[in-house]
Length: 235
Image 1: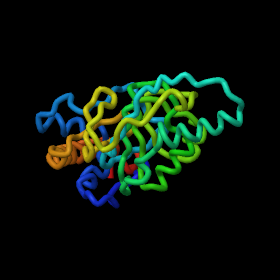
Image 2: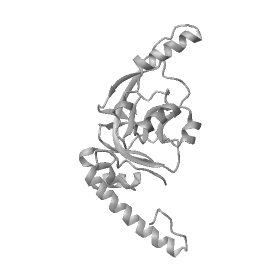
Image 3: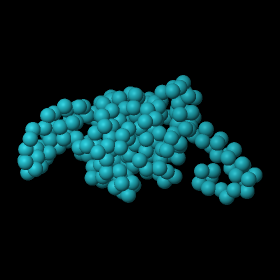
Image 4: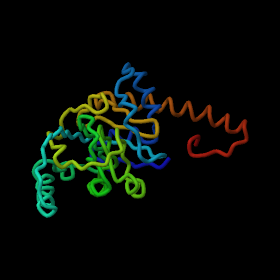
């Protein structure tokens, strides 16, 4: 499973989660008394299979706009759209992101196409390694071709214009039923997404590492008993 390493971040805490699976981290949370904490709603799923990410949470919040878009010509609508993105639904996280951040977006669980192939590339350029959306992502064919990791509640079609507006950034939000604060640790893979509170991250990572190494040792012996070639999951 390819890794999108977040160790370039000025906060070195995420590097403790290098190589850990979501399952390991969940077990680590159990071990330190945070049982069933941080488990993002299973409806928020990866668009790319076989990818694992870890990093610091960069939080952002968008809310329903409920705007009635007036009738206008296509040319007028182009101007209206540009103004909407500039004034009502900007992407300010692109200017504050640090390398290795994972963007976590509270969209009030709206089925709106907030994320797409263009913003995914812009986010990658800004150093963001993945996005976790309690809402919608569109342009999914291009997202997969670009290999820009995203976990989303919906595959969506609509634009944000008239539907969604910016409400806040770098604040505690809700994503998939989980409280997420800036700097919390996000780990995501094919099993889903888990949020580790920053204050417990070191202890969780150590417990999760013990679980991973124990699992590798047992599975390696079973590989050998079954004459299976060793792969990266047991080495």
